[in-house]
Image (spheres, helix red, strand yellow):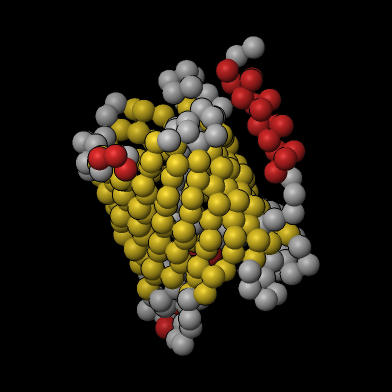
Amino acid sequence: MTIFARRLGGLAVAALALAAPVAAHADFHIRSPNEIDEHELEIEHNGAWSWDRNRDNDNAQSYTAEIGYGVNSWWHPELELGFERPPGVGQSTDVSEAVWENTFSLTEPGENWADVGFYWEYAHGLQNQSSDSMLFGPLFEKDVGHTTQTLNLFLGKNVGPHQDNHGFDLSYAWQSRWNMTQAFSPAVEVYGDAGQIDRIGKFQDQQFLVGPVGVGSFFVGPLGKFKYEAGYLFGATRASANGTVRWKFELEIPL
């Protein structure tokens, strides 16, 4: 039995354990099938701040606080608290959801034409009348010359009594990174949301953002490794905010 088959079987078993009612969201975060480190504790923060010429769509903010652990070489679960500030004037930032995230690696790096993984998250809405949701889909990564190409394809669905739609939403994310140095590598990222798959509309009515990002890492002594990502995303459609600053900070502590 190949490593892929064994891990796919393990994923099926884990999926049964994860199939309990909880909820879905997506943020500006590229997920790699190779980001799993066995017996490593991760403390992570993600953030995004958008601006728009339309005051009703301006100043949207989202933040996360996460903690995760590499259970083995192919499964990395995380627990997250999400905080959001809706766009517009006079809004406040409040805790929005509790999320259970799971990243599965299905191949060894370089074993196949591309490295393959699977992502599954379930989020529970913490606001009154907010729905729960789930998000899942494949992760692909491939080295091409001095670059690394990473693609995420996700389906999302609201669940529970307060859901505002009953279909599946299609979203995607892509990063093309030039591997310059460990401390800093430039990249280009794309984030898109095509909407509900049974009623995908015109491209201008879909969310689509693209922009430059810098990523890197360095060791911080006995604490382990500190990783960062920071960039600016331009809204390329009328359904997107004009601009979004996005960042990620992560501390990886070997245990």
